Length: 99
Image (cartoon, rainbow, N blue to C red):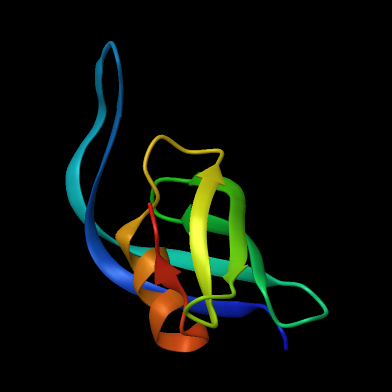
């Protein structure tokens, strides 16, 4: 399976622990979910061209023998995993969110 690419129009704000860098505005946000040779998602990337901002991270997905399903058990790289990534993992790959 190839990497999954999708985008959404969202309200975005850039901020740090010191305060706001860019005020809230509507912009296209592009998402990529990387898929390994077995069809299992293992990384993600988020990019907003309007703000020239990106972020990425790792997805830790395990097979649950009891439920016979792939489960998202952890992630790395960002403080909180973007909701569109979680939604696509469920919609496209049937992955259950076990966070």
